[in-house]
Length: 262
Image 1 (cartoon, rainbow, N blue to C red):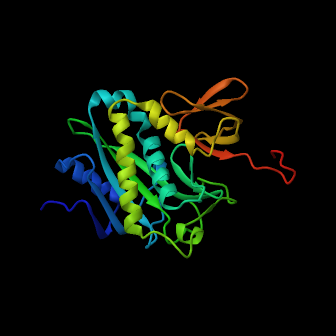
Image 2 (cartoon, rainbow, N blue to C red):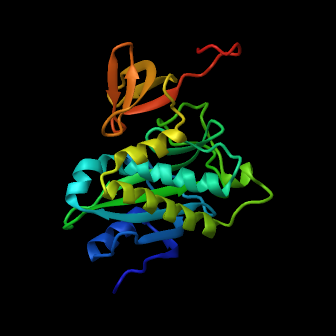
Image 3 (tube, rainbow, N blue to C red):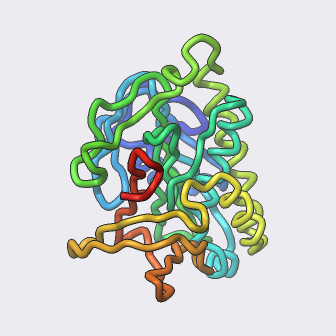
């Protein structure tokens, strides 16, 4: 039986898992699937994602030639974040939605959403599933244990704009369109345009003081110096170093009451 696509399901295990089955079935670039409730939502590094009803759960198939993927594939998660934020800022004018490296959606020092990209093997072209979880109607009371300090919180769009808010169907449609638009640049190996779109709304601007923890438990602190050729975060310690998203959890160093960094 052929799987449904380009529609909103009442329920599924995970839209990324469903999209993987669509990819292996041969569904084309741009195919998407969304659902109202996920039973096994997931985030980066195998963490669970709280899939509260009323929020947006969406996965999009991105296909490109192997040569283009070799040049620009590492930028897919950042391009997805850039597209999602550009769509949301166009819909919610005045909201300062930003991207927390590498691809979290951030609003008022709180997590608004996240993006999980997963490669699909056994396909002739390069194929990546871009999964988006967005707190549209409700925000989890607690963020995933170990991913953020206890002081971090989540926020939803309904709280940010309680009276006049675009419907979730319009939000979904605009995010899909904007993400696929960004992917067209990568399909032409145009990383520079994606970089510019990403940095325009990046939370971690050059000069931002950050701290991080590696998977092995090692802590570090430094100053953001930009993005590397593969989308890695460049930091000065003062020596230049590179941070990769699969290895670290990054936090902005909080400010004291006098404005200095703690």
